[in-house]
Length: 265
Image 1: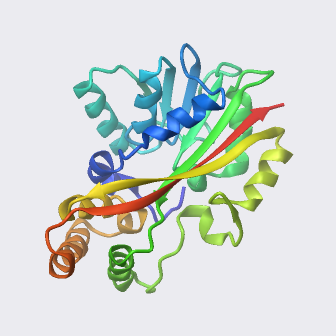
Image 2: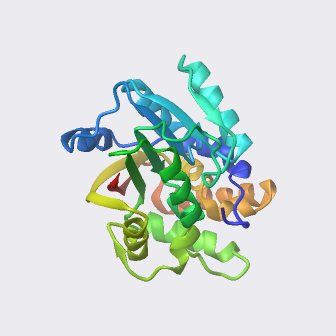
């Protein structure tokens, strides 16, 4: 994990505003033969449990692995409200303590770029079942270049110590991408005996009111290093700007979803 990022600081925003999982994701996986009924899944970097709950509803026996106690607490609160019983392990992806050779799938949503990838790949190989276990790496985020995005990012940038907004985690050091995945990841997967079965992307739209958009922005990793008072100040500046420039309207923000399906050889 990046030492400058503390998702515990934005756990409540994350729980409330980062549950925009597109319906198309599960459908796109089913089309490609990925189904979760009666399979064992380790969900690494499970956060507030949005993906864990989605595949639990599909019939998976899922364990979420998450290093942030605050995010797990939010996940358990949501699970309780939705009457789900999902197990979470408060560990890093590099050392899950899960049983070896025990999982049909290892899944990662919006988190691979935060991991020590080499150590995580060794751990994934350890816990996946032999002969055909599957690693599923997924990412998503806004891709719109609309004025609301440009203005929002500029306000955040104005408050950053160095006046820069770098890509999240290890993506900050990457120069070339395939479906939003740095090209070096594909070589790492291959070198660790993971065969790329498919990689694809699709776009989807999420509608936000002004306050909802501020909540979504409040969950971004860039804001996690600020104090609570500073985060409130930045979000209030964004909210005031939105009202002044756009008025009280819904904003339709284009997002992209990216998927890589890999089989352990």
